[in-house]
Amino acid sequence: MLEFKYPEALEEIIVHLKRLPGIGKRTAERLALAMLKWKGEKIIAFGESLEKLPLAVTFCPDCGGLAEDDKKCLICQAHNRDTKLLCVVEDFNQIMSIENSSFFKGLYHVLGGKLSPLENRSASDLNIDTLLERIDKLEVQEIILALSPDVEGQATAVYIANLLKNKEIKVTRLAQGLPAGADISFADAATIGAALSGRRNL
Image (cartoon, rainbow, N blue to C red; front, side, top):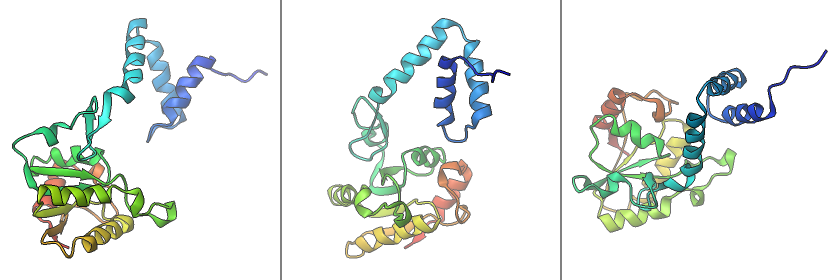
């Protein structure tokens, strides 16, 4: 009895889709089969969008957030942001979670992860040196460490706070609203707003 297999081109799409977070084999198959029902020009347009993605979407040279064509992101370009207030996040996708709260009006800095000895990620692997440079350049008065409240996030927050202890800067952390061990990428706007308004000194 022959084993059923999808055509090779379809199998390739399924393999790629399975690499996305939260997508298993069955979901990847359903998505790939759904694409087959698209008109040819729609599939071609989708492929062209994917091809442009790594060139068109870049990272802001200042904060590390998402930008276009190697330019600064819209937040760093804005003239109405409080440049004395800097919110430090682990990853660029967390900026959108905080922005959706409509509470924070300062600038951001993306660390690019958090300290994790088990994954061999040390301070040299994070954007900490550029953070210190921006603090001096912008004459920042308050740093908000919006890091996930797990062990690695707490260790990273303490490490950064220790680096700043000799500077006349207020260092705060997100407080109420975020459960222990949660990833702030998945927190809703109301929760983020409560955490920002209830931030505490570190």
